[in-house]
Length: 366
Image (cartoon, rainbow, N blue to C red; front, side, top):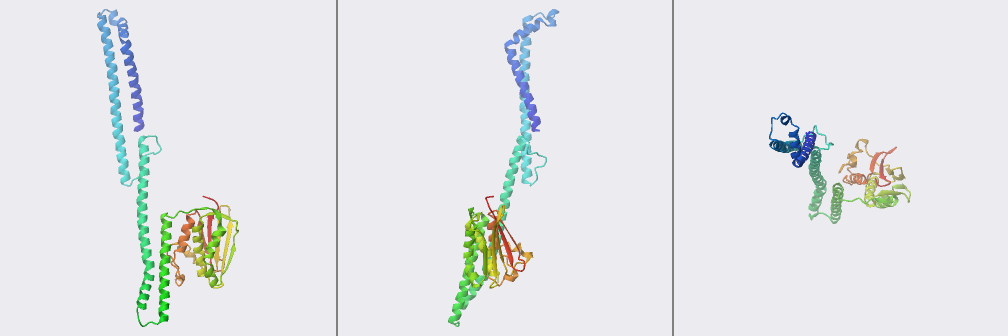
């Protein structure tokens, strides 16, 4: 429709220009042309029309009038077609808006055409996609908030109940000094668990909301790994766990040191926790073409193959580890941190027993 209107408009404009030029020419030279036309007319040759001056003037005025009427008619026709095109354009825009409101597809419309309707439709479609994205994001945020509140409530219920029982017990006069000391230690332990839970939830919330800005740069992965190992060294010594490390001190990896240390610590902390006394933890770091692999393996209790994906979910814990301390958020944070650095993490069973975690971080900015 718009192309047809543009074509007709071009023809009318050209026709109006031609008529206008003829009108101007006729205003200046029409009188002479009229006189010459009378001279050569058949009526004069046959002596039918004898008023020469009157005839020339009449032809001149009639021609001026016809040209003027032609210009006016073409102008009116141009305005009429423009009005029809505008009405049609507005109707199409209204139809597009109705389709967008009703959630319908923009069928039968080529958004790549060089027409005003196509350009408006393309802009409206982008606006529609933006509105859908914002609406879906808002719904996802509400769902995440509900899930987070539910998780917090569930995780706090047990330690708070234990603290209530301990406080009531400590209020009794019949308990001994030794029992008081024991209950106080248990109360402090429950408070530490709540503090750890809240810190973990805050980290998870900040990571999910994008508040944390990952500052990646090319730096030594050996130093980052050393800091993570320093945080689990004492617990590993208590259980007499043998830790071997194979990592070049000069190996540079593109990563955020603070948060990568946090991610590696969570894996190492689990390795120490679930590995028996006098167990083994092997750490190997090797540079590949695109990524650097950090492999952490142990001979602990291992992870069931059907739960390889579940262990990265928030607050997930296998039944066989319920007797161990923990809330099931460490590996969730680890994967979030690695993903935010354009890396990835895998897990599988060790040859005989235990677990192997493989962390891949990009060697350069991606």
